[in-house]
Length: 312
Ligand SMILES: Cc1cc2nc3c(=O)[nH]c(=O)nc-3n(C[C@H](O)[C@H](O)[C@H](O)COP(=O)(O)OP(=O)(O)OC[C@H]3O[C@@H](n4cnc5c(N)ncnc54)[C@H](O)[C@@H]3O)c2cc1C
Image 1: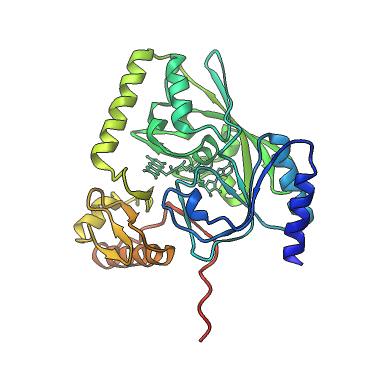
Image 2 (image 1 turned 120 degrees about the vertical axis):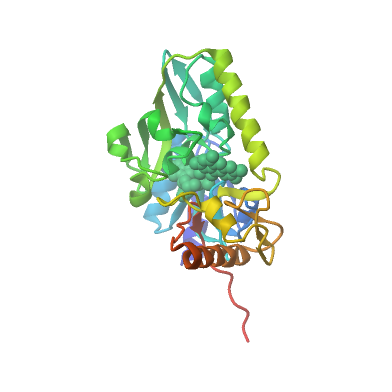
């Protein structure tokens, strides 16, 4: 029944007038910066908002679950992979329109591209985003931030579809932004467009600030290794990285997952499995809780199924 529904969805999507990329059984490790994750039953990469809507509508009619994927830079996908349809909002839909101090970007645009485009147009407020390796959609959904900046400071409107394909449009207040959280996390809605309102700045200063932020990142973060950025959210009591470091966990490894030697807030994949990574996360949480009395909460989003256990 499930397989028949997937086949039917593929048939309906391929019957459309425009090309749409559909992959069956591709490993999610290919689509995440952690390079972890088993196969997804179907990965669909729409090129236009109307196709996004069609995927959502048809999948809903067929009773198929849909998971939204951006650049996969904040995702830990488990070894058993993903049942259902992964809707990839990254490869296409990258348009950015600028008019005065207003920018309207499509969800698939990279944050770095958006940040550059804003600086080029002498618009301030998005330099913080230049080194965040995610999409505008993923960054808005996560309320991503760095160096004192955050999406909530610049976003004015978010548009997209709910999981049945019905359009929605939220203004800033309706988004209920808070630290690495938005209402979309509680409602499951897909972002297609984000509008920003930005103050004027000086192009040269903005570009220089971006260079400085990226230099500081490269100095402190293990950017040449597979990670999803900071694994844990910043707790109210202090900094996760400092606590992990003070617990003596820098460099600690389980299988191929390791607490980075360079930045203890980054757990990295050195060729292990998602199970290794989850075990390391749990170990770090336990040790920090025992020694500091603080329960670290994951910032990375965990998706998918465990690997099937071998029959005995
Ligand atoms: C080296 C490194 C450094 C990082 N530095 C930072 C940092 O400084 N600050 C920071 O905040 N983060 C940082 N991150 C984490 C990550 O880049 C951000 O969270 C980013 O915003 C995620 O965007 P994405 O497109 O990769 O989303 P994904 O990882 O693909 O998805 C993240 C979540 O967003 C949802 N999502 C994605 N696209 C959409 C959409 N169009 N509509 C609705 N939901 C969607 C997904 O379903 C998922 O739940 C870093 C990651 C790495 C690897």
